[in-house]
Image (cartoon, rainbow, N blue to C red):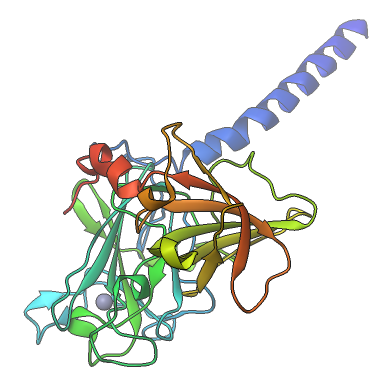
Length: 331
Ligand SMILES: [Zn+2]
């Protein structure tokens, strides 16, 4: 009897251990192929392509081109080529989000009908390609959209992003000028494009963009806000800096991420303190367009601009990213 009890005890323990191990084994079934390697056989294959866990790359309720229809392989260009992606229809300037963690690179030209594209090289071994990114001024189809109407203001080539991070805006650039605003989304592994349909159908939809704020130790005071912003223009003699807002955090810790172009003036005066986060000395005149600022400002915002008490300055990410740029593989 005692032996039986021991056995029952032993098997109970084994079941508990197996129960704990099995889910992690199942989770590994969807392990991504190794970077630069051949696709792993453990990636789940479906009738509509490999299943890659991801965030849905368009904010809100974007729909597939033909509702619920897989357009992978459809003839395009009058039958001269096949459709190697999926099309998500959405209004102009709907925010685009990172499908997974990785490093971005992007193309933008100033030519009319510029084709704005973004590549996301994922830590998971996959690459996501975003096409037809906005190239127009808001509510127009003029082909004259400047950089801030294409990509997130703080985004630079070679930059690391997290899944769900705001990247840019839906548009109709390139050969979508007459088709309607949409994201053409491709998923690539080392062998080329695969059908993204299943991954998109099962992707997690977000209700707000995500972002890893740099220097989280910099907090707003009791009557302050922390504004993360990217420099657009400095007018030191006029006592102001024009910025693109990236995110706001209040003293209670509530963070709001901007996914619309939002330009503000920061008032600076002799009491405003500047601190450079890489420890090198900083003059106000040394602030450049593209520098990222962390601004601790008076919470009350008046019409004439934001009153900054202390401005922390990150070096221009573009300069910092030069060393990383070679790692972002363009296909
Ligand atoms: Zn397409």
